[in-house]
Length: 290
Ligand code: C2E
Ligand code: MG
Ligand code: MG
Ligand code: MG
Image (cartoon, rainbow, N blue to C red; front, side, top):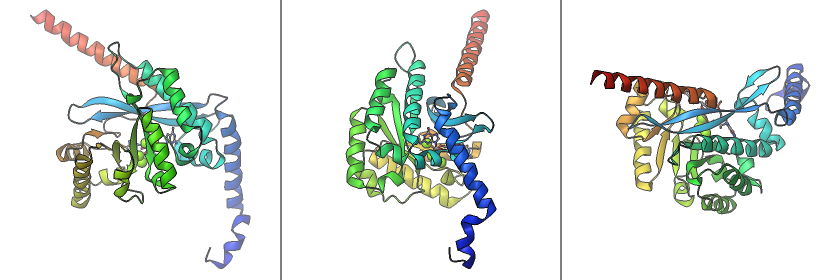
């Protein structure tokens, strides 16, 4: 804006084209729900001590008729600005809880499910009702649902936010603070708000095996988590070295391409099936050898 040419900005063809593109995408997004173009992929959240999957994070994608699979980075902000995030978020809650309930095992146990909730969606009057309805419809044990919020929500109207977070907590669900360490939150928030889980942002995880500073920062977060009784999830683990360093620091849970990519539900079911077939084969072999 300090440049003298700034006032011509909106008339530049490239900006005009970008604006048109955005308008077109928004027009399509209005139809996306009705046309059933939104899909959820699920990324495993792994218990680092036992190396078992403790749950999944639901991540929305848009199967656009001509653009292909559109990542959330390209349409969540658009959905927030237009208010479409409310019906989209409602659908995500329903679909993710339905899937988690479907993955429940006969003994009643099953994976947890994490769902991202953006600021505008959280602040909308229907949020608590939407969560309650999703739990009701699916029959999912509320303790198996985690809502992921960001620090940007906590720096908004603190009194209103606290009340609403308490309402959500009263439903029995867990709350996670996503991208922890990247926002403006003071540590005081961790005492004031009923948070259960900290998700350590990928930007710290990236350096955990190579940068003494990042290693130390995560070490401090581990101590903080222990003191405040919070679960920790390291985000964006991409290498075996990062995984080993995080294990060494005592981080409880991890997520990342090294542990498992976000995939459609059917792909995870296939993997579980393959594992069962494999275990059965190993078992048969063992029986044979006896
Ligand atoms: P997030 O909640 O922090 O999700 C983690 C993002 O990191 C996901 O990107 C995931 O695919 C990606 N990721 C996981 N492991 C790795 C890794 O090892 N390396 C790298 N480079 N990336 C990794 P995705 O799916 O593109 O989602 C981006 C963001 O969009 C999410 O960040 C979340 O803020 C938002 N989002 C996704 N789904 C929803 C949704 O249903 N509702 C709302 N409101 N926001 C959503
Ligand atoms: Mg998240
Ligand atoms: Mg995150
Ligand atoms: Mg992130």
